[in-house]
Amino acid sequence: MLGAMGTSAAAQDRATSAPVCASADKAQIAALFDRWNASLATGNPDRVTANYAPDAVLLPTVTNEPRATPADIRDYFVKFLKDQPQGTIDKRFIKIGCNVAQDVGTYTFRFGSGATVKARYTYVYEWSDGQWLIAHHHSSAMPEATSR
Image 1 (cartoon, rainbow, N blue to C red):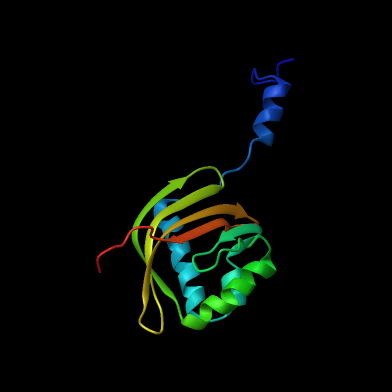
Image 2: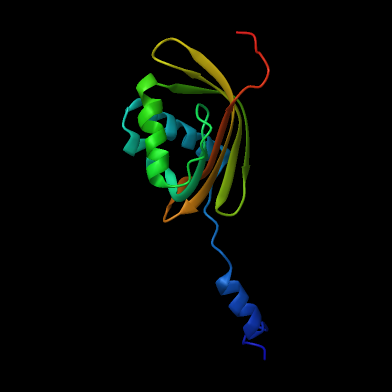
């Protein structure tokens, strides 16, 4: 049966049940790393963990253990923050979809001791309850020696 404007009831139902996609551009997604990095600077593991979705998975740089609960993610950052890490993006690629975005590339971490670590990263963000949260974060040290 067609409605007053010539559309079927089924088409109207599909239109109203279509997901609403959060608006985002590459600069907004890039700023999510800055938000995460700023939370590292606080030294507070709860502030860092707040960037992650409740069902997020973290594959961290300096441990072999995947972290798949907020408590496990927090535990990782309790230890990691003791070294006063701060990251700088070296190269990135951002892709944006409907309520999901990826920020993938390489970064360098500098620690309070002066040590640096170059690593590859992947952040997958999901739009949830009005904010972008990290759903998946993978970071691994570079497999090949790099010049400084």
